Length: 308
Image (cartoon, rainbow, N blue to C red; front, top):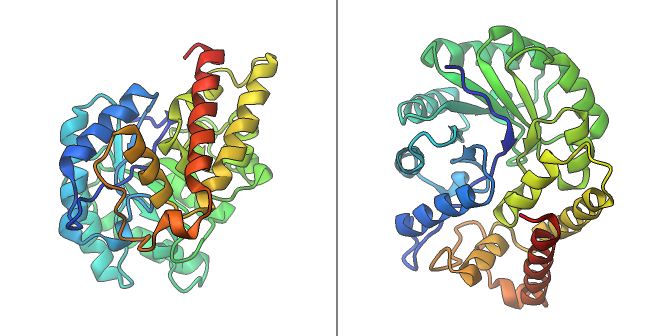
């Protein structure tokens, strides 16, 4: 049966213990928290997972663990190719493909590291397709690190026409671009999923098949409610949309550390340790704990209002 990505796709965090190792007990708690809060799929190895700071062995183990603990309840997708050379990327992608994920996600800036354009993108894409299992579903991710490399319309058409791609995590942060891309893939199994909170509701109404932004680590259930009610005329829809957009502004306060601090307070994880954020969040970002209080209290208030 063909895998479809449609709904809320949390970009998973990687919990670490005080020694800096992956905390698999906390990761299992995370998986169940995502399920309890409306996840329709899980993005297991991505920037939010701190993939640039994980060894290949850790990326493979992380992906395999999420697949095992998910147990087929929702699709699991994973990326993890971070090397600056094609040979390294091929090794990474083949390894991730062997973990049992439902789709391997290609990072667009790795497909064209020098921003040379369509020809370079196509050359590397075809090379990857030749080395990955022919029945392996694929995705695309306009990962912002080390730089954001947006796809051209011709590149989206190229990927669409292979019949291999099922999802693009769109990081254009532009509603008109999303509308155009939705039309390009209309009628296929290749779905566009927006990752920007500021345009989440409008993007859903324009055909984004859910949401995959970083605040799926705070209140994915509210995004799921928004997706289910995107065409409703209830004023509460716009009210929730505004709350979600404003909450997401806290991303600049040391993400993914801020999300880990949030979950440490919830009891989901043991520590807020991060390999990406090495400074003291509370010392650097004044009143960050009060911000988290407001986000939590607001989330609970809107859960009550929406009946979640």
